[in-house]
Image 1 (cartoon, rainbow, N blue to C red):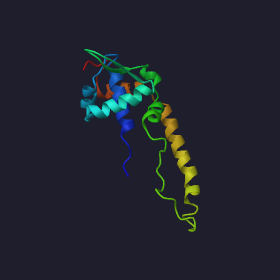
Image 2: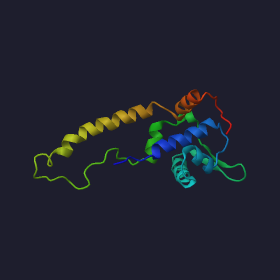
Image 3: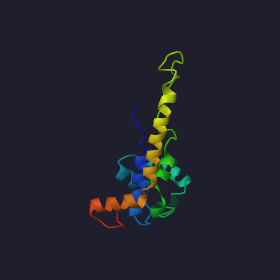
Image 4: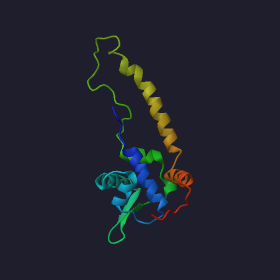
Amino acid sequence: MPTSTRFAVAVHVLTALAVSDGTPMRSEDLAYSVNTSAVVIRGLLSRLGEAGFTRSQLGAGGGAMLAKAAGDIRLLDVYEAVEDPELFSLHRTPPCENCAVGGNILQALQPTLARARSALEQELAKTTVADVAGEVARLGKFSIPLVW
C-alpha cells in the first residue's frame, strides 16, 4: 500500500516559501517546483492556511506566503496538519477472534506501532521548515532569499 505524499509536498511548499523570504508565490510556480498540478498545491495551501502556516495575498503580484517564521514551523506540526492521524493501517476487517493468532495480533502489535509513531513524532519535532530550507540552500549552493 502506498503512503500519502501530502507531508513531503507540504514541506516542499513551505520550504519554497521560506526560501522566497516573504515574496508571494503563485500556486502555479509552486506546482512547477513540486512537479504537480496547481490544484494539488491549492488544496495543500488550504490545509496549511487552516493550520496557520500560510496566508494568501490577493491581486497582482499575489500568492502564498508563510504566515509565521519558518523556524517556528516544526515538521511534526506540518505532518499533523496534512496527514491522516493513523500512521499505520491495520486490517480492513477484524481478524478472526477464534484463531490463536487472529484473536491476539492487534493487541500484540499495538505497543510496537505506538513506539514507532512516538519515535517518528519525536524526530519530526526536532526539525523546522527553516532547517530544511537551510539544508536545501546548502545543497543547492545558494543563499536565502532565493529570487525565483
